[in-house]
Image (cartoon, rainbow, N blue to C red; front, side, top):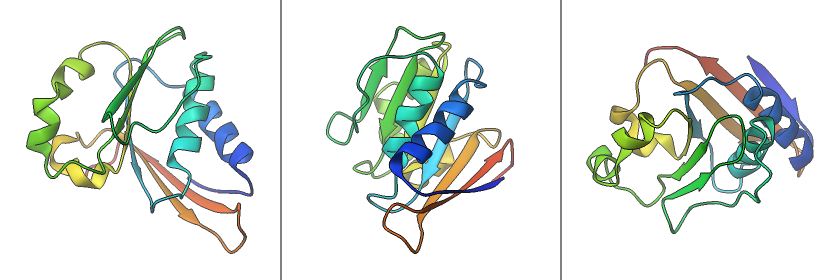
Length: 142
């Protein structure tokens, strides 16, 4: 599915719509340039899951955990990781087994660790400042 949003609020709203439908164990793999809106989309996912916490980018911590919604949210930023091996070193398999949703920014850096059935979200800048082109595919093999 392809979508166009025209503000960070619209990007968050699209994320909230997705978050309301996600099931335990879902991995959402994000791609897109710096500042494309990946974290804004994840803020929406959290809202759709019923999480009221402030959602921030986990760039320096690698993963932020959010509880308090219908499912926990594990928000990963793989920008600084060099390989999937590093992902496994921080306990990736444990997060997968905890019954939450894993949102993975910069998923291309750990592509070999991601299953083919994850939800893929690609976010690209549009012609206007707030415009984003968002492509979502579910359950496709790499």
